[in-house]
Image 1 (cartoon, helix red, strand yellow):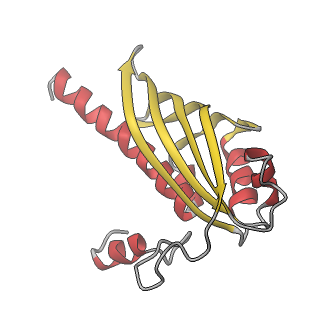
Image 2 (tube, one colour; image 1 turned 45 degrees about the horizontal axis):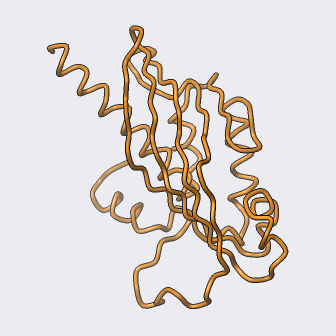
Length: 188
């Protein structure tokens, strides 16, 4: 494979890791999140700073509560810059939209002091960037170090019934439509 084709393949592998991370968080598929990081990876994410498995435990503690209603991560601009052999600096812009009920207190308080005590659901929009050091080990690219940079956060109280129940609505787990379609398509 030529150097140019190899760089394109490496970039696509890195983008795939980023997309797996986003799906994993949004669907609470912690195995998928884990697969985005090397075992010794370090994550600096809001109030958390530490190793991969501790980070996933921290995420689960906040996301695996009934009142964490919705999570949608949209990935945008992604600049991948290769440095030393097997190392890339990657900056990926994200928009995270979250809906949090009153029972998601810890996450609400961390992100929104204004509405933290409200008994109404809040919808949050977080703008930021994942600034990652990707490494290639054993022919596989993964995140070795992540720093999550927050650029803006806004929140509002949710108008109940804003989505039509007759539509196909996303869920935060294995019952989500993406897993049904994957199974139907023979994707394991």
